[in-house]
Length: 162
Image (cartoon, rainbow, N blue to C red; front, side, top):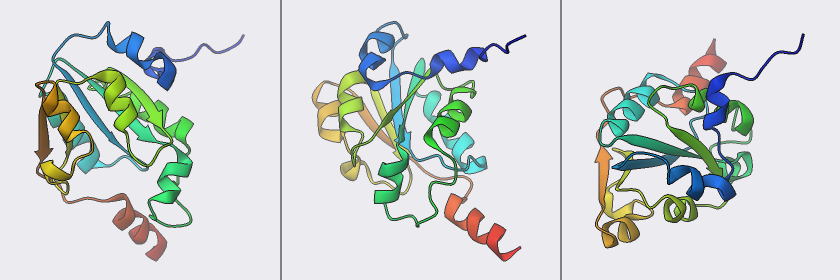
């Protein structure tokens, strides 16, 4: 008997389908993005805080090639895009998850037209990609301070030392 796909996989949306799927979500809509390579406590805390700023949240992930261009290391990402999408989709706080291959998520932001654009505390609001566009249509941009100082890079360094 063939296994059926888990229900959360329906939350994974190709970029060309994103605008249509977002239209069915409740507002205010929150948008965030990142690599989310090895999900850790800092990530899930941040995602829960971001989701609390609206009624639904869309997360856009960097493709594998996009992660490599960020210069995080030759061995990054550790997890493939397909695996990162599945893990992100399984989180209760995420309504939809998509991806972008460009160096920035600007096109996905334009596709979604979020009411709230969010990044982590290492991003000052004025440097967040999409800030001008989101505030231009009356939305707000939020930089959430870190509660748990965690990083995938530090986690990988610790694993290598072991």
